[in-house]
Picture 1 (cartoon, rainbow, N blue to C red):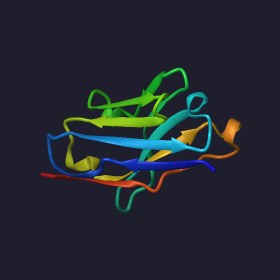
Picture 2: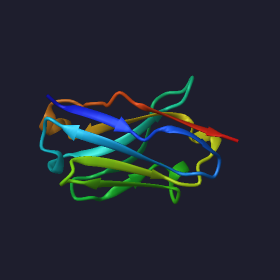
Picture 3: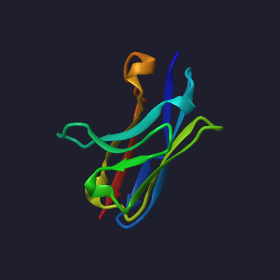
Amino acid sequence: QVQLEESGGGSVQAGGSLKLSCAASGYTFSVCGMAWYRQAPGKERELVAAIGSDSTTYYTGSVKGRFTISRDNNKRTLYLQMNSLITEDTAVYYCATHCASTLGKTYWGQGTQVTVHS
Protein backbone atom coordinates (compact mmCIF):
# COMPACT_ATOMS: atom_id res chain seq x y z
CA GLN A 1 0.00 0.00 0.00
CA VAL A 2 0.98 3.64 -0.36
CA GLN A 3 3.10 4.88 2.51
CA LEU A 4 4.69 8.27 3.10
CA GLU A 5 7.10 8.85 5.96
CA GLU A 6 8.39 12.31 6.82
CA SER A 7 11.57 13.05 8.74
CA GLY A 8 13.83 16.00 9.47
CA GLY A 9 11.62 18.16 11.63
CA GLY A 10 12.86 19.75 14.81
CA SER A 11 13.39 22.94 16.73
CA VAL A 12 15.47 25.78 15.32
CA GLN A 13 16.07 29.46 15.98
CA ALA A 14 14.66 32.07 13.66
CA GLY A 15 16.95 32.52 10.68
CA GLY A 16 18.01 28.91 10.75
CA SER A 17 17.45 26.07 8.30
CA LEU A 18 15.92 22.61 8.24
CA LYS A 19 15.55 20.01 5.50
CA LEU A 20 12.53 17.74 5.51
CA SER A 21 12.43 14.39 3.74
CA CYS A 22 9.51 12.21 2.74
CA ALA A 23 10.20 8.59 1.82
CA ALA A 24 7.53 7.10 -0.43
CA SER A 25 6.63 3.48 -1.11
CA GLY A 26 3.82 1.38 -2.55
CA TYR A 27 3.35 3.21 -5.86
CA THR A 28 5.29 4.49 -8.86
CA PHE A 29 6.81 7.60 -7.29
CA SER A 30 8.16 9.10 -10.50
CA VAL A 31 4.75 9.47 -12.19
CA CYS A 32 3.10 11.37 -9.34
CA GLY A 33 3.16 14.98 -8.37
CA MET A 34 3.97 15.55 -4.69
CA ALA A 35 3.45 18.33 -2.20
CA TRP A 36 4.22 19.66 1.25
CA TYR A 37 1.45 21.03 3.45
CA ARG A 38 1.57 22.46 6.94
CA GLN A 39 -0.86 23.02 9.76
CA ALA A 40 -0.22 25.48 12.55
CA PRO A 41 -2.15 25.31 15.85
CA GLY A 42 -5.65 26.68 15.41
CA LYS A 43 -5.25 27.08 11.65
CA GLU A 44 -6.32 25.11 8.60
CA ARG A 45 -3.88 22.94 6.72
CA GLU A 46 -2.28 24.90 3.88
CA LEU A 47 -0.33 24.00 0.77
CA VAL A 48 3.30 25.09 1.12
CA ALA A 49 4.92 23.79 -2.07
CA ALA A 50 4.27 21.29 -4.83
CA ILE A 51 6.33 19.57 -7.50
CA GLY A 52 5.06 17.85 -10.61
CA SER A 53 6.24 14.60 -12.13
CA ASP A 54 8.14 16.83 -14.57
CA SER A 55 9.69 18.72 -11.63
CA THR A 56 7.80 21.95 -12.21
CA THR A 57 7.31 23.67 -8.87
CA TYR A 58 4.81 25.85 -7.03
CA TYR A 59 5.28 27.80 -3.79
CA THR A 60 2.84 29.67 -1.65
CA GLY A 61 3.73 33.34 -1.41
CA SER A 62 4.98 33.37 2.16
CA VAL A 63 7.74 30.82 1.48
CA LYS A 64 8.91 31.94 -1.97
CA GLY A 65 12.64 32.54 -1.99
CA ARG A 66 13.10 30.74 1.34
CA PHE A 67 11.90 27.16 0.71
CA THR A 68 12.90 24.77 -2.06
CA ILE A 69 10.98 21.62 -2.96
CA SER A 70 12.78 18.86 -4.81
CA ARG A 71 12.55 15.16 -5.54
CA ASP A 72 14.87 12.23 -6.15
CA ASN A 73 13.00 9.63 -8.15
CA ASN A 74 15.80 7.08 -7.76
CA LYS A 75 15.52 7.32 -3.97
CA ARG A 76 11.71 7.73 -4.06
CA THR A 77 12.12 10.71 -1.78
CA LEU A 78 10.62 14.19 -1.63
CA TYR A 79 12.50 17.05 0.05
CA LEU A 80 11.77 20.50 1.42
CA GLN A 81 14.76 22.72 2.13
CA MET A 82 13.68 25.50 4.47
CA ASN A 83 15.96 28.50 4.94
CA SER A 84 15.56 31.82 6.75
CA LEU A 85 12.93 30.27 8.98
CA ILE A 86 10.58 32.57 10.87
CA THR A 87 8.32 31.88 13.84
CA GLU A 88 5.31 31.85 11.53
CA ASP A 89 6.74 28.71 9.89
CA THR A 90 6.04 26.76 13.09
CA ALA A 91 3.65 23.94 12.18
CA VAL A 92 3.29 20.25 11.56
CA TYR A 93 4.50 19.57 8.01
CA TYR A 94 2.93 16.82 5.93
CA CYS A 95 3.90 15.38 2.60
CA ALA A 96 1.15 14.26 0.26
CA THR A 97 0.67 12.71 -3.12
CA HIS A 98 -0.75 14.93 -5.85
CA CYS A 99 -2.02 12.33 -8.33
CA ALA A 100 -5.49 11.30 -7.27
CA SER A 101 -6.35 10.41 -10.88
CA THR A 102 -3.68 7.67 -10.70
CA LEU A 103 -3.90 6.57 -7.07
CA GLY A 104 -7.61 7.12 -6.50
CA LYS A 105 -7.15 9.55 -3.65
CA THR A 106 -4.62 11.75 -1.91
CA TYR A 107 -2.30 10.02 0.52
CA TRP A 108 -0.73 11.75 3.53
CA GLY A 109 2.25 11.16 5.74
CA GLN A 110 1.97 11.26 9.52
CA GLY A 111 3.56 14.70 9.77
CA THR A 112 6.71 16.10 11.31
CA GLN A 113 6.84 19.01 13.76
CA VAL A 114 8.82 22.13 12.91
CA THR A 115 9.23 24.69 15.68
CA VAL A 116 10.96 28.02 15.09
CA HIS A 117 12.01 29.99 18.17
CA SER A 118 12.52 33.74 18.19
